[in-house]
Image (tube, rainbow, N blue to C red; front, side, top):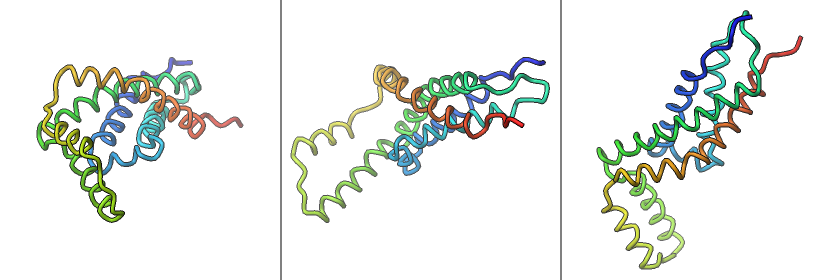
Length: 166
């Protein structure tokens, strides 16, 4: 039997998938549904890994899928932070602006008045520029939840793509 395929490229594809879903405004609302975008990234990386298997290779295992999911989570954090920095530097705080527009519409419709401290906090955040420390802190905070959800996605992917017993 031949050895198993490399896990890096499928993890990179999954990381790019997750980072794109997390970064692109409007599309990133997918994550509002139980981190569905990050779960899908884990599933996607397992699909890409499973496609690299040949008849001669050892069969796909749950352990392989968990490794691919973990690598995907780590890669996706790094990529998503850099992609978010690029979007923010090019277009400003687009996500925050969209969220505030939605919040303004909802509060106006319901007759809710937001506290002054909230509005001041949003204004301060709109003025803040991205920093290296903020990017590193963001990676540290995000690496565990991203890894957990991509591993869960990879376990779902294992159940979808595992070898069928004949």
